Every structure is written in C-alpha cells, then in structure tokens.
Length: 349
Ligand code: BDR
Ligand code: CA
Image (cartoon, rainbow, N blue to C red):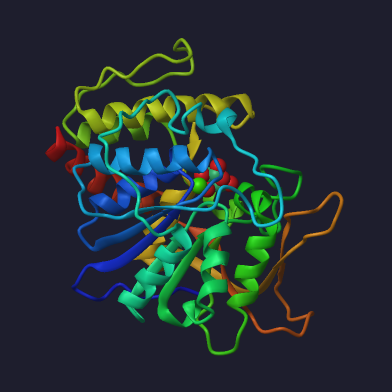
C-alpha cells in the first residue's frame, strides 16, 4: 500500500518529538531545510541523552541553522514506569558524536513537552503532522492530557519498533520502544479507536535500509559547496572535519562518531538514518510502502520486554492501529536529502 498526500502548496505544520541524538539532529536539519515544512514546535524527550542535554541540543541546533522562533519544550525526566537508560555509547557524550554545540542563551518554553503536543495540535486541528523519533513518553502523557489528540492530527509518523526483525537494544526490542515500553503501548492503544487514521510506524526492518556512507556525506558537502576530505575507516578515531561550512562541519563530526559505533557493531563504516526517514515520510508518505497491522508492545516478557508485535492477519480480532513501513527506495531518500540540506547549508556558510 502507498499513501499519496503531499499535494498541498502551503507548508505543512510539523511538530517534532526528538531525543537528539545524531540521527534526530539530521531529521531536524532535514525539516528546517524543507520549504514545504513549517516546524511549529519541538518536544525534547529523554532518551539518547538526558532531557536537559536534549533541550540544549535542540536549541543550539536551531541557532546553528539560523532557524528562529521555533519553541522547544522540555519533557519528562524519564520514562513513565521505568528508570531512564541513555545511549552515549551510540551518540557521544553530548548526543552529537564528536560535535559540541555552544549555547546561545535561548531557553525552553514555560510549558512542558506534553502540553506542547496538545497546544500544537489544537492550534492546527486536522493539519498538524507529528513525528515522534524518540521514546514515546511525552506523546503518551499528551494523550493522557488530551484524549482527543489522535483525532486532531493529520498524520503521526513514529520511528520505533522492529517488525519481524531483530532488535538493536535487546535481541528483540528497538531502542525507542525499549526505553519506555509502557508509553509506546499507551500510544498504540490510543490510536486503536475506530475511525482514526493509523500512525505510520517505521521500524528497524525499514530504517536500516537508510545507510549513510562516507561517499554520500561527501556528496552532501559538495552540494553545500564546502570541500571536505572523504572519511575513511582507516582515519584515526575522532578525526575532526575540515569542512569550512559550519553545518557540514558539525554533521561530519557527529556522523564520524556514529560511523565508528556502527562499525564496532559489525555493520560497516556507515550510519543508519532512522529518524531522517521519519522526517521525510512526514512530508512525503509515498516514499514508503506500508502494510496495515495491529501493533502492540510486550510489557512483561522476561526476554521480550519492549518487543513490538504486529498481528498482520487479524488473529487478535482487533482492528489495525498502524501502517507499518515495509519498503523504501533509499536512493530517492538520499537524493532528496542532499538536494535540500546541501543548498540549505550553503546558504548558512
Ligand atoms: C532509534 O534509537 C535512537 O538511538 C535513534 O535516534 C533512533 O531514533 C533507532 O533505534
Ligand atoms: Ca531518536
């Protein structure tokens, strides 16, 4: 199944819930660079790093990108029912690999991230596209506060889970769901009511097709007219970018760490861009092919907690509550990413 829904001329209001994170940062940059997206708010969720570091990264990234006036809200300190785990081994000590972004003194909103979801949805009823690419803590809290939230959104895109596919955090669980399984279960249940548009759910089975390589990164730098030195697995670890362009330099320093992490996992000198795929699908859902399923989250299994299970054939007797991504053309994704982010970076340089 494909979804065609990118015909409107006006920019699409987008609300992004992120745990920034290298690939979250790439997703935000993609949205900032997209003239057909109007980012109306950012929820900072604890996950890859602690929530205050996520807030800092979001505010500093906006500044780096010259994108002003986007409210950033702080989320809960940790998951709904379990202790927070973070992933500095994957994303670096500050969440952005080897990059360090200075603060410009801007601050988060006086209201929290759950309220930010509700405010954004009420301000753009039937129009807002939400993307959730971290643990679903704040989205679940938002639905508790406003049970009508699913009816207010035009579309919700979730990066989370792994469908008929191994996990990346436990043998069977993907990171975003594994960090806060109760929140994920609440979100899937909230979108189970009859008549709702099911969320688009992009799991590892799909997002691991979006593999950024040094060759593609060099193409991005060229599109930004910022000559750079192609990264290689033979480089000393932590080698810093020589790119003159400030955005390309930060992305290269961030991605170097992410490449090294993936290499150490035995996946090659590359980086899976899970969250940027969600950003792209928020604007162009027809980039991906889907299959409807009823999705639920295992909460009690001693070996399987956090696993996402898709009932493809209606065996539970419950209607579908998700459109699970099953196919994507990575070449189209990267062409579009480079076409947008390259010139955007050039204008900043
Ligand atoms: C997800 O986990 C995080 O580390 C990434 O940012 C992505 O959202 C992939 O499992
Ligand atoms: Ca993320």
